[in-house]
Length: 161
Image (cartoon, rainbow, N blue to C red; front, side, top):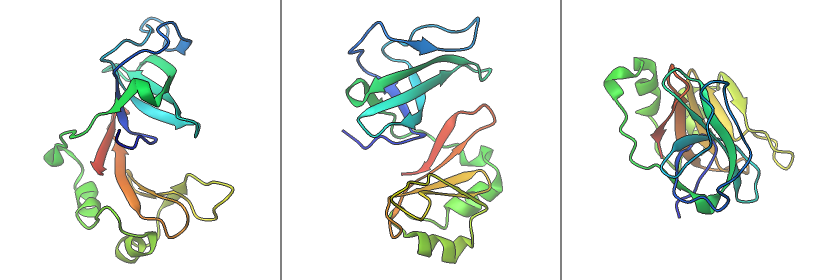
């Protein structure tokens, strides 16, 4: 099974627990079903993920917890590069999966923002350049795992993986 991480787009392939707690926006909320897609919004480290599915208006259809065995990562998302802001393309075209933080920062400079701090490590696992999030493996010398951004509707787009 491919690695699943925060911000990945996933599809529900089975429901180990068909009746589960879920939340969503009043008026559009419904239970998750097989075939639905959503974005990983939180991982708890024990093969369990909070996944959110939104509609075209950006309203939450459902937010629920899933085990990794219930999900598959949606691979091969087609990125419409012509529709993305040019600064996104300018950032991503300089990068390759496996680059270290130091290599990325020597090319792009200091990050505008950081995130994904863990108590065990001093360095962030996420460097942000504009709308682009670069996700790294820990510890500090970890390599670039993927580049990600959200579109105007809050839909996650994996730019590199």
